[in-house]
Image (tube, rainbow, N blue to C red; front, side, top):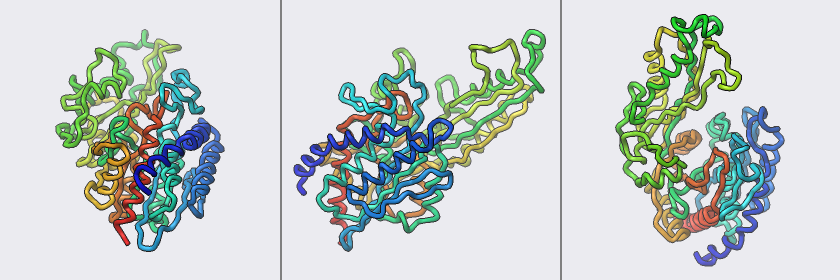
Length: 449
C-alpha cells in the first residue's frame, strides 16, 4: 500500500480509534484492589482480547501473573521468511490522585481544545489504540505479529518481568516495539534511546518511646521529624543538584537539547520559580541522578497536636542515569542517610527493588526502517531523546532477547500530563504513531526473506 493510501486509511479509522479509547478509558483499571474493584481490570483485559481478536490476532488469551493481574497475549504468523515483531503496551492506569483537580470526568473520554482527556488516554491506553489502528490499516500483515499487554505496570510489581524470563519462547521476536513513551513534542517523531533506572527507599527516624507534649518536653528532646527534615535537606544543594554522597552528578546529555522555556511550559513551572540544577535541562533530566521526596508520614496540619512525634518517615525516589548502577546508587543513598542523621537518632532504611537504567540500539535494520517510517508519517526527521522515567521490563527483554532490536515510542508527549490530574492525548499523535507503525511493518518485512 502506498504511503498516501495508508495515510488516508489511518485517517478514516480515527473515529473508530476514538470509540476504542472511550471504551478503554471507561474502565477504572487501577491494579490496586484497595482503590478499585479488580473486576475493572478484568473488564479492560477482556476488551483488549476482543478488540485485537477482531483485528486478526489469533489465540488471544489471558496469562495469569503471580499477583493475579492478567496480561493479554496473542499472535499471528507472518509470511514465510519474514521477521516477527512484538508489540507491547499496558492497560492498567495510575489512580486519579486529586479528583477535585480534574476539569472533566476522570474515567470518561472528553474532548477539549482538540485533545482527548481521561485517565489512561495517553498512558497507556492511547498506545493500545495506536497498535489497533496500525494493524487495522494494513490489508495484509507483512510480518509476524505478537502482542503482550500488561495489567500491572503502574504498580511496579514486576509480574511480567518474571514471566518473560520463564517463558522466553512465547514472546521471542526479531524486533520489540515498546509503546509506553512518546514524542519530544507534538508532531516531532521521537525514539527514546535511554531510560533512567530507579533506586527508591523509605527512611524511618526514631528517637522516643512515645509522643510527648511539646510544652513539657520541647527543647532538649530530639525531634524525629526535625531530624528527618534535616536529613532530607542534605539530598540537594542550594542550586538543586542531587548531593547523595558517592554519586556522580557531572554527566552531560549528548542528544537533543531541551530548551528551558519549552521545559517550563511542559512541566507547568510557575512564573518566577527557578529551574534547578547546575546543568542543562537535558543533563538534569536524562544524564544525572535525581532525587524526589515522594511522601512523608507525619501529622497533618489540620488536627495536629502540640506534641513531639516519636518517629517520622519518608519515601524517596532516586532516578539513576545510564552509566550508573542502580544497586550501587541505592547503597550510596542508604549510607548517606546513616551518615547525616543528627543527634544519634535511630535510622532504618527499607529498600525497594532497584531497576537498572537502560540504553537501546539505534543503528540496526529495524531502527533504520523505523526512522524512515517516522519521517514519512510525520513529514520530518525523527530525533532521539532520553526519558527520565523507568521501565524495568526493557532490561528484562534486552537480557532475554539480546539479538532483538528494541524501540521505545508512543503517544505520551509532555502535554499529556501522565500520572497527573487532567491527563490527555493529542489525537494527531495516535494517528501519526499508528501510521508510522504500519509503515514500519511494511518496510521491515523487506529486510528478510
